[in-house]
Amino acid sequence: MVLKKIVHLFFIVSGATIGYLYIPYIIRLLEFTDLTWVESPFLGAALGAIILFVISYMLADYIVDFLRWIEEGLVKIPIGDLLLGSLGLIIGLVTAFLINLPIQEIQIEFVSNVMPLFITILLGYFGFQVGFRRRDELMNLISINRKEKKKGPSDTEGLDTHPRPKILDTSVIIDGRIADICQTSFIEGTIVIPQFVLGELQHIADSSDVLKRNRGRRGLDVLNRIQKELPIKVEIYEGDFEDIQEVDSKLIKLAKVIDGIVVTNDFNLNKVCDLQGVHVLNINDLANAVKPVVLPGEELMVQVIKDGKEQNQGIAYLDDGTMIVVEEGRNYIGKTIEVLITSVLQTSAGRMIFAKPKLLEKAL
Image (cartoon, rainbow, N blue to C red; front, side, top):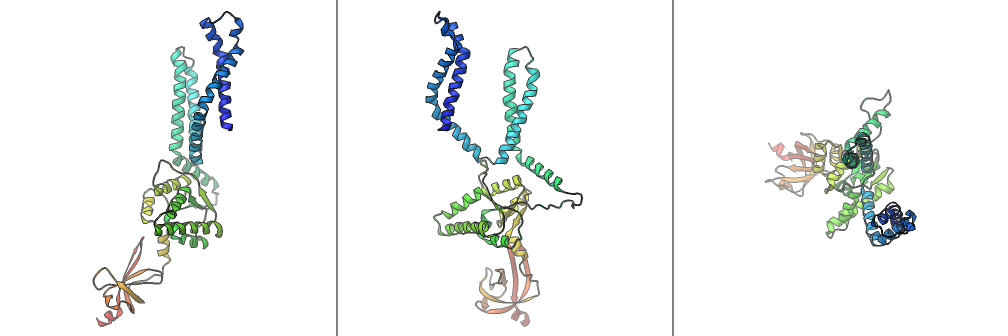
């Protein structure tokens, strides 16, 4: 294993350096022997290298496991978070170096030797934390500056010619209509599918519940169709937000980081995005917008399917699935009748139409 050999080499070099600098001094201090060649720094280097080489065999496996743990943690961190955290660390270290220059001139040993180390560690830590925790603001600032530079003199103020990435949530993937919308080219820009959404889909597809398992597999089939059959760019976001547990919260965080738009049909996620200032596209809103317009006073031919919640109500449906509540329509269940629209209720959850049989209207 290459990493293990590097650890051994590090111990050998460190042992040789320590032995070269300190072992002759220790021998002279202890007055171990009168032989001068024993105090040779090269002999001390060899002795130090051998000692630490033997110690490395006892510690190498633990050190390699620790380094592997650090490596896995760094790989999971999104590249933007890692870059901004490193940038903050560098700024903190440079600031500490400039502060330490005059401090090292002070003739007090504690101040000149210990304080620079303390300041370097402290400012390096604070720099990394500021860069890492304020990454959203920094990314948005960079994005805004880039957009302003791309605008020419003839550009209209506020016009963005570069479509923002669209982030799909689990519900809209399972729903399946997003594939048909992408096929019609109504959605522009890159489709982003986060890795944590794929993980949730896979978990649903592996569920012991038959209904959940079928929904999860349908979602995976929809993603496969979008990626392989449709002329649209699809990217898998490999990063994750370990400090956030809920998938919806991770989607909102990702939208802020990459300046993207969440695509969903989840009413609650839609509201949370609005509250946090994240742009959202709701498939249900789009479906309601393209439904045929029905106005009070119009007449329709419908088939009453079942009874409603209230007394004497009947329920019918339009071809697009819109529910029609027919007052006094319970007696017409199973029949096709002409109804008169009395009112239309429009919400983000859907459209509901209220009507009454035209035969009753004529009777009145």
